[in-house]
Amino acid sequence: MLVWKPEDIQFDRSEVLRYLGYGSNAAKVGVRIRKMVEQEMDTARTLIAPRGYFRIVDAAPLREWEYFSDAERVAFGVATIGEALETRVKALFAAGEGTRGVLLDAAGSAAAEAVTDLVNREVWRWAKRMGYRTTRRFSPGYGTWSVEGQELVFQHLRDRKVEQLGVTLTPSLLMVPLKSVSFAIKLGRQSMREVNKGRCVSCALEENCPFRGRDDVCRKASGERV
Amino acid sequence: MGIYQLLSRAVEAAEVDRVEKLTRTALDEGLAPNDVLDNGLMPGIEVVGEKFGRGELFIPEVMMSARALQTGLGVLRPFLKVEDTSFKGKLVLGTVAGDIHDLGKNLVAMMFTANGYEVIDLGVDVSSEKFVAAAEEHQPDFIGLSALLTTTMSRMPEIIRLLDERGLRGNTCRVIVGGAPLNESFAAEIGADLYADSAIEAVNLVRKTLSA
Image (cartoon, rainbow over all chains, first blue to last red; front, side, top):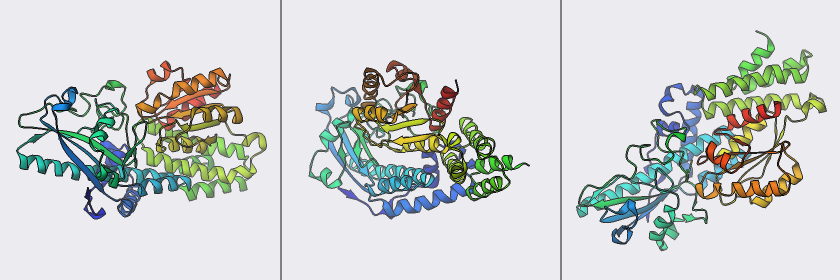
């Protein structure tokens, strides 16, 4: 299991604003909101317990899945910031502090993604050492990979270390804590097809998505943590 | 600038203290509480909704304005007559079984509360039977179903079917659905009465439906 100190997790204001839907409109954020965002980012740093885990498996048994057909190995991983932040978000809403709740929640999403970047980096390091190329990470419920992919990810992560990590999958394939990210990365000696090419291009939601075309990560597809 | 316009602007600017003060001033000046609500507070939040729709404002600003509106409502409420204070409508709301996402649902609850509706929030992971029981108990104008996963939005048709079977849905109680993986065609497919892709749109749709 990979464990980091909260201060090792770098996430910036622009990321948090992106999760709040500002996208390229960050300049429109007023002074008051900007200040509250900073405060909630500071709060988030006191509430996160960044942890992660990954396993690299032989891709041969996975080739029946189109996503892994050109891979030699596959890294399955999961990252989380723990439960404390979402508990605080609930408490803020219950106390009528919904604005702060939304801001803290967005800070939590940005932090969870930053932890995932660190797990991803460890996969890259391993791949580089072993002479493999890697694809970008892709997650169940995002882009074209349906949320049912969670079963595959967790099937390969089912060991004591994941239990220590404290991330579980509900029968409806939801990760608990909610601020968790699961993913797969393909590894191989040759170039491999990216699963989610250019942000929205390969998304089955097509034009129905209100976030489509924004300079944004996919927040619309099922499995959303924000 | 008249006091109604000042109030409206204060709601729009999410100036909570100013809204409170102006609402009290309006009452002190002898203005009718329901006029203060309809001509001062509500136009402010309506402008916010329009700006949100045009992409000029974002969720945090909307929520702050909603809070300002609630503050004003809190000042008015003891002075409103029973017939005036009766809520504009009643909404039973929850995230469907198997789903524990509550942020979107909470935003919807907050926007409806701020706009003068009575909200009965059933929480998250709400069983279909619980939605039906709440519909029977509270006789709401609307039942709001939220889901954030493709695996859980499939609960929605079951809830609609159960409501229909018990005769709990119709012109007096409509089902409104929303959540990230949903869209208009899914809502139509499962026979939902309304689909909203944001909390503000939900309020607008409900307002239009009730005034139709």
